[in-house]
Length: 315
Image 1 (cartoon, helix red, strand yellow):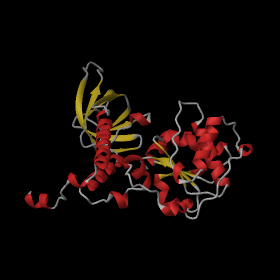
Image 2 (image 1 turned 120 degrees about the vertical axis):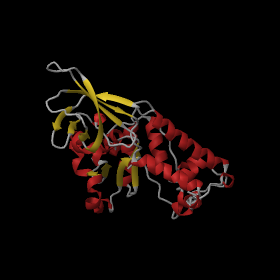
Image 3 (image 1 turned 30 degrees about the vertical axis):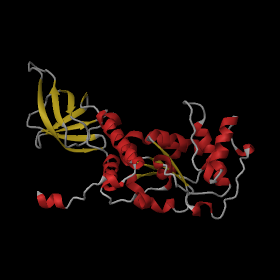
Image 4 (image 1 turned 90 degrees about the vertical axis):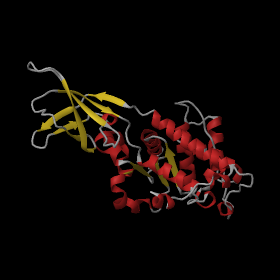
């Protein structure tokens, strides 16, 4: 044990600024709070069939939210309904495999001919790949294996750390970008004054306008502002636009708005787990521009020269 501990990089918080420690603490607390919101027990109904030879219950979910994921901290209970004079009973099971809408549960109980009423999953799901990566980065920063100056991009530096001596990279303004004018005649939707102001601010590439915050309740035209900005920027020859949102549905809505504005040279990256079997029907009108994680390597060349890429924060 001592040998293993000696190989662990030490943590010295005294060498970090208060701003950095607040940022790391907030990120950690937020992650913990999100994890605590995950349910510790869920009971759902599934379509099932029993493989008597392998003593496995084949389970099929009808919704993405109900799919069973294999986790290290979960215990599974299969509730069998009363039938043919036999009372209801419960047997324990382990998740042998889980993929897309299908999961196989190993159980010692003989369930052939039995009617499974519900299945209960006890314990929280394992962290997602994005959650694991976030925790690893925070630990590496604390251990000094990642330098905030070298590895944190300017956006994180400005928004979260706000050092007094912060300066945007000089090369971002060299040569000075040509101003882009918002031509309302080329925007296929009417824009109100606040929308126009936001778009002009987004088009301005001077240091004073690097960050634009657009706030408004649903239905107030935020997606229209994004599409109008992209259309104007692309028409002016700009590229390297990366559109990111918290959820797959939000990203899809932006992509559909781009298509509605007549934009076709963009690619949407989506998790195959979310897309396949569950939500393919949502992407029918933009399927040609959609790349699932399963096809990343095969279709990677499509991103070369593509001026606009869309994805979720966790991709």
